[in-house]
Amino acid sequence: MPKKLLVLKAVLFDMDGVIVDTEPLHHRAYFGMFDTLNIEVSESHYQTFTGQSTINVCKNLCKHFKLSNNPEDLVQVKRNIFKDLFKNDPNLQLIDGVLNLIKEYHENGLTLVLASSASMGTIESVFTRFELDQYFIAKLSGADLKASKPHPEIFLNAAKASGFNKQNCLVIEDSTNGIRAAHAAKIFCVGYKSIHSKNQDYSLANKVISNFNEINYSKVQNFFNN
Image (cartoon, helix red, strand yellow):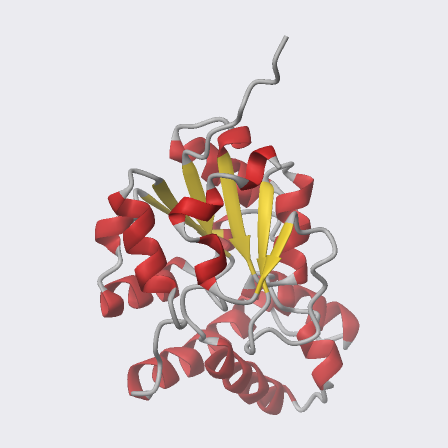
């Protein structure tokens, strides 16, 4: 009996580092928060936060540094700094090539879902600024979940929101935690290794790329069956 071919129906996008590079703003916002707490966080420690929700980062910080602060209060401090930076930074742009990729997928009938660890407020700000709502049927925030990436919940929920089986979905991620989450969810994962991604582990990705041309519509359909 011939092997049944899988067909790609939905693409589940991460946001930070895949659609838009807000990492420099997050970096400045987090380190601004660290300053208010008088704690020293190394760059290598900071990079382990990539892909996690802000609340989980703040909970880990409170535990690691034995802080008496309420993690929810720290989240608000960080978000207030980030919001101000986002509003006043004219250099914030979409990642090179991603808008063309999103448009091409949409025009060819693929269902697009956002699955990001960012807060819904940040997601809405990005989608409004760059007029992305017209291409996506759903937006999911890991900040609304009990467990953030590398837990698979957000991608399982995103696959469900797409209306298709997870075998017909593909994740695009740039972080260690995001790739681990997709792997744990057993969803085909493309690891996007860009100049914005530092010290991330792509070993669990099914396919690693450095340019979105590598996953244009005509090429991406073949991944599942190779």
